[in-house]
Length: 514
Image 1 (spheres, rainbow, N blue to C red):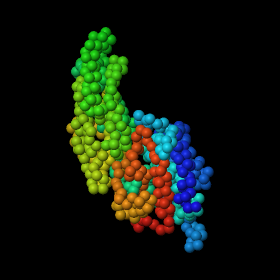
Image 2: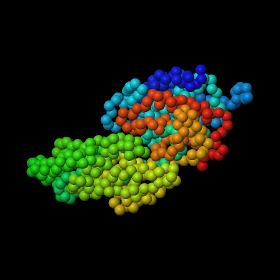
Image 3: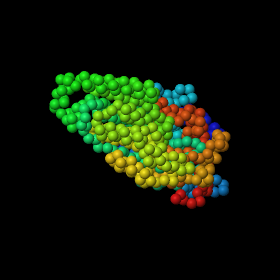
């Protein structure tokens, strides 16, 4: 029986392994003892290591920050006799952590529900499905008697969605592989990843001096790299003349006595009418309700991956649009709302913000406003930008500076990753493309540069490779994330062939990557 036939016989085990992985609620959490990313991430990690040890693979654990499952390769002579250990390693980094759920799920996000040929759950596509595929690709090759000429290492990352500190710790303790691929993107093959940066745009807010409708607080989004599917604002009626946002003893006493109730009710009624009008004009899922003496306005959007913001509906943007039309009394909050609407708004290319740029391989720069927090004292907007492979991070910051300075704002740099790029005719890229084409018959799809970021950046000479097929629905970071079992198994076949092809004798690289 060849390894493809063995793999098909393991279909139910592949699905079962994925369902087990989905059951772990592996959103990064606060450290718990020796578990730096929380109990649920650790459970998923421990599950994979234990499974590999039972199946006879070598394992390595870098103090629970990450680790790997390894199948040692060997050098053989003409007769197939082993004469030495392999001195080159293929690395395949995956991650077991997932993004937060967001709202609106109709299937149990941790249930791994098997609905016919579909498995639902957070992580089915990003990235637990790929972890299961690669693991079984290694397992069946081993069972079929294949002897790789290079070591094969499945690297288990644990905080890919939130900062990569685990990968950094892992690479401090484990020697990096010589080359590899990350199954955390799309087929046919990703030959480039745009530069990534996360920063905050901040504004200090001053007490209002007018009486009227005040934006007291605002909160939305759960991660910079997700299109936020929720945002809410708390609106109050206050006497701004106190200079303390309506917190003077005199104004508090008047409110308690109900002397401002009529004015407040009139203003709140106009807000409710504006909500209804905005909903009718835009189709936004916006609502409002009374919360004590305040009014809460909420918007529900549609989550999507931050590299494809056009696939979602940004709840922050919709709520900012609404707030810009209701005449806020606190001036500095109003100025921040106006800045957002005029220089960010519904754009995803950064044009009005002054940072639009692009190149042939990458296309245009991508902007996602992922999170917002606003209080009486300050407004902080978290922005995720993907910039072209031919540009540098400082090119974006330099272009951003005029808009920041002219609006009295500040910028706080949070994180950044340089672009990754290989020419489409690189032999390594060509080998992966050939494997994909042989397994699918698709000769039209070409290597692409994407806005997302993968662990391919963390190891030498690596690109992203699958597991999403060109015709598959894009569901990463969205509610009701799912994977089809046929796609899952097809990806496993591709990974088995790729591992086999990449671990033959000889090198695909004439020179090291710059």
